[in-house]
Length: 507
Image 1 (cartoon, rainbow, N blue to C red):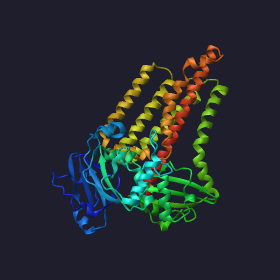
Image 2: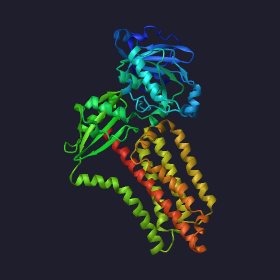
Image 3: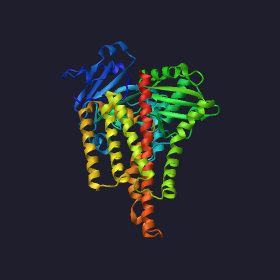
Image 4: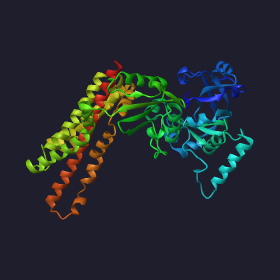
């Protein structure tokens, strides 16, 4: 059975579950259910049921209990398009049957709002006067309190198929906070959810900046303008770096408490002179089922700091210098204009081959991630073989080159399929490696940008002879490809070091 889980637990009033029946349907495997103490099930066309936690609800009495919500998706597990596209997902959306009560301040702290609406900044839609409606809402709340017949609506797994998000009630939350209303009614809706293996790739804990500011102020007691810039109210982030005279502050949002404490312990093991100072006594602050950590770093002095800065700037300096130097040598010194056996051609082959070798080494060292590393290794090997046969030794027809590339890729696909169980973990590690953005930029330069710049009609518009057009077009094309290959190599080296460093820390 494919079940979706809410991305966080909700502190709901335990008294609301007195009339919620216990689940009495077919047995659900434990692997399909979360480990939370209280689990609520919602289904289309059926009443909400308590899957687990009746004892915890009874012990809580009039207090609150943290509830994880499980739902039966109306969108098939394989139908990623309907899960991710809003206008398609809303066609399959359904509402849960129960209405529950939650703290207004807890709703604000959980960061479910897509925007914080106030009287001064209501949502504008058409010509409707939202300011007057907000005033009427606040007046009604002050006079009669919250109307439970109009609960706010939280849609489960709405953002990217994995993060819960507030669907209706943005104005009501702000109005309740302004009027001092402590409790509000909430009900839940759902449609689809990404498979859990994909959630690990795309799901990242995030909070709106204005919610983050209030959380920092309440948990850390620091001047918030010092930690979070005031001109970023519309930004969502889970990693913020704010420069300060003499140091910098980093705020990190972690998905679970265990990982937060591992991160804190890792920071304590760093050299005391370079170690960050954890604020709030080093304890993570819980915000909406996620854990907020704040660090203060010194600027860093001496040779190690300079070396660190140089390492970060190396790709930005080395890539253009290497590409420009190779082009100048080929054109001005060797007079090959990036032809056969040119320095540029050898560099292209070398970058692709070294990238492939690094991925093969990772595949040999780590069996748990062998399939993902091998996939990139065979891809880079096919690129290296093509460059060797077409640009370095251009002695054979194009169809032979493409045949060799197809054979290498076919062997790679077969190998990856045979070890497919190790693909997901390796892909997550590579995607989370530093400088991963360099890979799509590099491949785009090799396969797309270089082909666009090599269109002969573009260069024939210039006042050049036919031979000059051919030379210029070829130099630009090969230079762009070399830029892409060097970017790919930079990412491969970064991923190689990142994976080995991660393994070393685990050991």
